Image 1 (tube, rainbow, N blue to C red):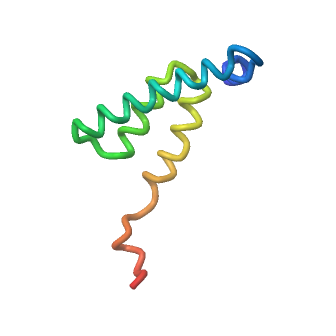
Image 2 (cartoon, one colour; image 1 turned 45 degrees about the vertical axis):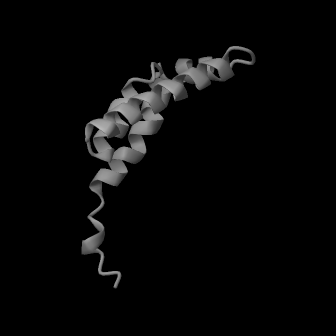
Length: 79
């Protein structure tokens, strides 16, 4: 499923239109969810699902899970 969806997004004529439409959906969803007050990790996960593309939702979801596992900045003893 992942390969087929990625292949569709990189077709010569239709691919750029599909990618642009998916990015527009993700941006609109992120805007609405952030405006509603959700935290950033939840917003990224939910907006990736709204893209309509399995490939895009997986590529957006991966950095969100990595970000969720890291400790907060105040625990890093940077100062």
